[in-house]
Image (tube, rainbow, N blue to C red):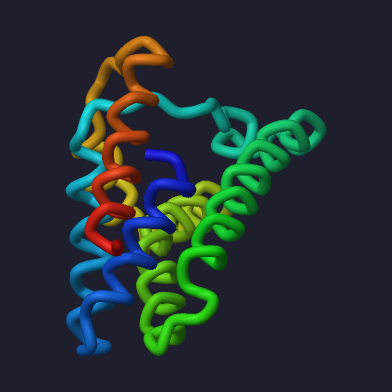
Length: 148
């Protein structure tokens, strides 16, 4: 899933739930649940393989994805009484992908089990880009409907 979709679902979760611990647990759980849904995403092969002289484009894709998600989320949550809970939901909703990136860069054994689990829940074959993007758009729309 795109970071955009994870961020929005995490924000909505934080807006709807008061318990900080429940927000943290559900944000992480929903990250993996969303990754099970057939989806497409942009490639970040150069970041994964640590091809530093070619990773700028991949890094730009990730930053653009995150920036777009943050802009939409802040638009949704800015005047909410649950602003901090929404931010917490956003943070923990992208934590598994952040830890995957750290694993790619460090190959630390502490994160290998998480990386292997994360890879295992993704489909081996991605659907065509537009079809895979549709599932993510529907996920975001459902999350926004829940908010309103």
